[in-house]
Image (cartoon, rainbow, N blue to C red; front, top):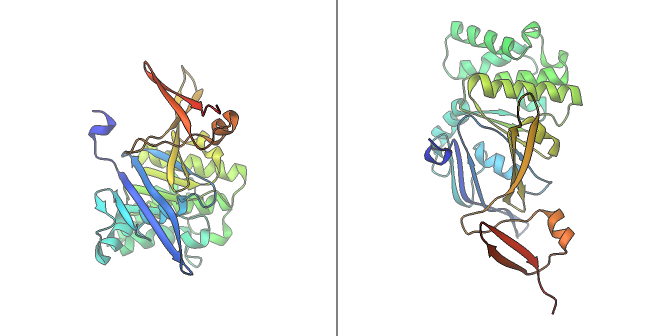
Length: 291
């Protein structure tokens, strides 16, 4: 069965978000389309102001779009009531934010932090104990189970945050700049943990970041520019071994629009209008003839 025959885990169609600030309308998302299949490990990248944080807030249930459609794991985010939204955030989706203070309760131990959402989810004490032990072990932090967050390194704190986010077995894990405050070595630890979560649990993982180097850590990277998906980079294994090849693709929306990469536009001096020509199995794009 091809990917288009399955129901996507995340489906955004013509997503629009307009904010009003001091009487001025700011369009953060301009008809964004996105499809993420079950079990994918995806990074969403973009410069500040591109719309990626707005998208994450909508997908995480913290915000609602002004128009369009957004469905995550069968939940229509526009139609959800308060009770469904609470259950959605407790059971369907997990969240890892950049700052440890947003992920962890400082006066609880690592094990108690992981047990807390399970308690809220109604699991018994024995179930909580077993699940907590399994997650701490899988993420390589079982040896700090009795320590409080301030006694852990930055990398350990974020791996603990991943364990907390996975406590109730969510279908989707959203990560907002999860390595933004970490050094290179700690960042590698966190990315390895997210890859393990994706492969071991089959959890769909979406990482939102401004760091373009994350492309090397995931199989698919979606770039957002000016409130729309502009391009995707797919990594595939080349031959035997660990060698991978990354290929960038422009994204074609429902109206047939695409955004050309900035370096392509600059290299050819493209402005205002371009000339298109259909040739056999491809399209050629030419600068406007100045004559």
